Length: 261
Ligand SMILES: [Zn+2]
Image (cartoon, rainbow, N blue to C red; front, side):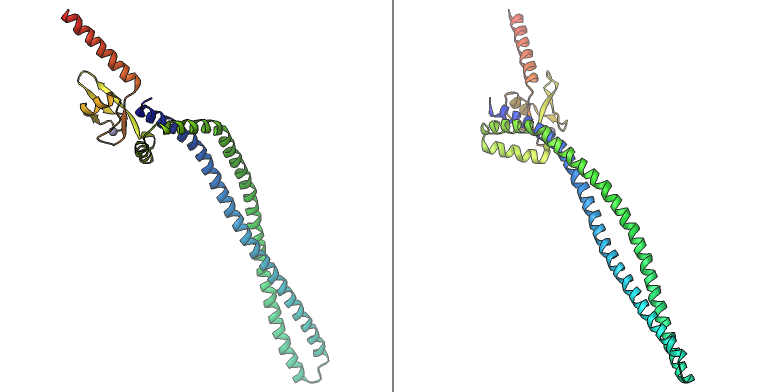
């Protein structure tokens, strides 16, 4: 096999490898997107859980505060009952009013805390449901990715071995140039020359559809690999095109011979 043919073979093997891997990449991408969404839900859930715990603690603080004030109020009421002078009574009354105001403020904060706590509980339940649902999707996506990976594994190994063997027969600088081109152009790194009209020597590049000059076309016909002057992809000639060309040449020669004879 010539280096050109080997390069073409290598290109075909690479194309198959890319095709197989791109299917896997799609599944891989979906899986990692879903996993990232799940991680985000888990993060939100953890943050709200901390917030909820803090609110619960503050509710319990306010509750303790209200109970402490209540006890204080009860003591004051007893003291008021046994007040000896109206001045003493009034002093107790003022103190009592202060405690009452503090107690109702504590109770109000406790109520606010409870409302926020209930709101957070709803949000947490909602997040928990979303997490459960997303966990299922992630598990399915992972199974799908693993399955696709397993499906192509043997074929990928086979092609990788073929590729390695082909690569050994190609000069290093050619291989490098080829790989650079593939990086830039992917599946369109190499393209066959199309014969538009053989008699008037009209050829075109099948990647960019631009005309290929006759001299370029004829060196490609001789099996050389040449870059398309327009899009720079590597041009080659299909076996079938070459066979058709030589058959037509043979016919032409036969015809000429017949005319001469
Ligand atoms: Zn081109």
